[in-house]
Length: 183
View 1 (cartoon, rainbow, N blue to C red):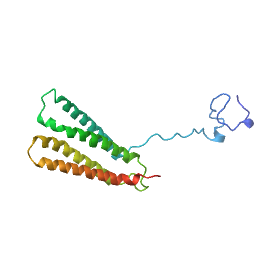
View 2: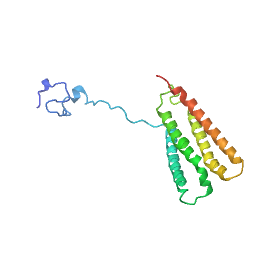
View 3: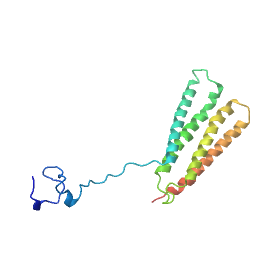
View 4: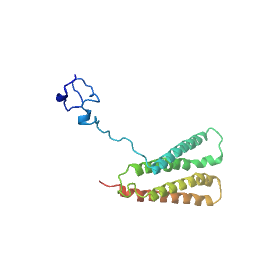
């Protein structure tokens, strides 16, 4: 298949043989073989997204464990405080797992707000995370304690927990609202 020097053709791929040209023939005149670029399938997950998502996984595991404890109550003698875990179970799932998973994915995947603030304000993302988790941790302690203790302070702990979670929700809305747009 060698061709005389004057009859070389411009193609790099020989259709008749299916073989690539040798390094010495065709490469120097036409440059190296260029394959089409692949679309990048690698998306780097932002640090706040990783924080929200990994934390949500921890809360999922904790919620399932609390579910096991609640399921054991009818068959095993459990401490009275386990009876106060029902709202904790709900909050671990809804705020700990679902809400934080949604917040993390929204922070990552929603349309960019602008070139300067593609994901909104990092301070609001951090505030969302801190407020949701502070409120949730206070609920994990306050709700069961309120069910077994006569101390009125536990009621205020639960109120503070709810307030912190509400503020975390407002921070999320404030940061995400501008990213919900038509184009």
